[in-house]
Amino acid sequence: MGRLTRLAPDQVPPEIREMFRKFLAERGNIPNMFRSVAHRPEILATMLAHFRAVMGPGTVPVPLKEMLAVRVSRLNSCDY
Amino acid sequence: MAKQFGVGDGAIAGLSDPGRFPFPPDQKAALRFADAMTEGGGEVSDDLYDDLRRHFTEAQIVEIAAVIGLFNYFNRFNNAFRMDITLTDPDVVVRRAEEAATDDGEGDARTLSERIVEILAQGRRYLWVGVYRREKDAMVLLAHRGPSTLPHSFRVGEGNVGAAAGTGVTRVIDDIGKGATHGASFAAGRSELVVPVRGGTDVLGVIDARGDREGAFGEEDRALVERVASILAPALAGGHATRR
View 1 (cartoon, rainbow over the protein chains, first blue to last red):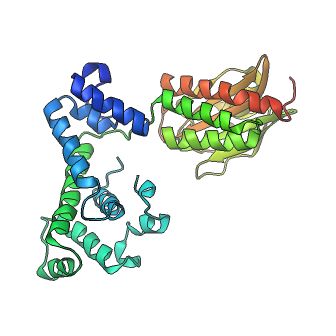
View 2: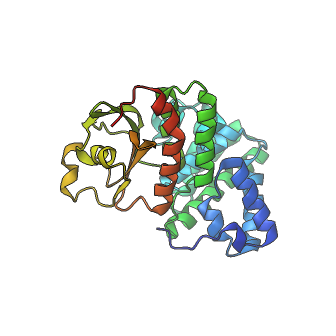
View 3: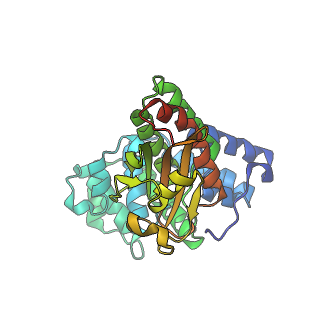
């Protein structure tokens, strides 16, 4: 069991609730990390914006970025 | 995650040891850069940087470094808090199972069972999940997902699968090592959830799920698999189900 409590949509400010709703609609879940970071809504909002800017379409092919993410996670022994 | 973005299985496996997999030179350079940035103090040699520069613009290198930096941030954050892997919301799993049942139309038990075990394994990260169908006095495996080889049939009353079939009652086994009823079904997983698929008073089959740790199945998964069992029931009733 994780160390941080995870906030549910009804425990977060409206703008974060809208982001949670989108996650649920698009991928069928709200990542636990984001539900935990929601304890600090400003950090979560900018984290999500940064995540999209970095991992979304840019100048590097998305599949290569996904491969780099997997490689780094393996090096860090992070199953999450 | 990477799979749905068009990364092949071979490449994903190759990421455990990129030096031994034939990645194209540009990908190889980016992966070596990821290793250098992640390990130790993050020292990147001139040779490596020159190699990177041959394949990518500065804008691209900024983007690549941002990916590597971001995942180091996320990984360390999640490791520190022992963050649990995210599971699919039970209501969404049920909706997917309902959609599979609707697509199935004709009610082919095997096809729908294949879809259902896939939905459960993928959405809830079960170590192993299988659907058994009752055929006379035996429970016969119709579909499964997971690495281990479990018995393809149980007699009704035998093991947890057979017991659930005999009683028509859900069984949750928090510690698979304990309890005499488990003798017949080998050690696959640390905990088990066995849910009968009922059609009226008949038991048509059983959904058997295994967890990779003790007590993996709480009330949420029990309720979820029971809902999925009721979605599967009409298809199992249409097959060779035998009345009790």
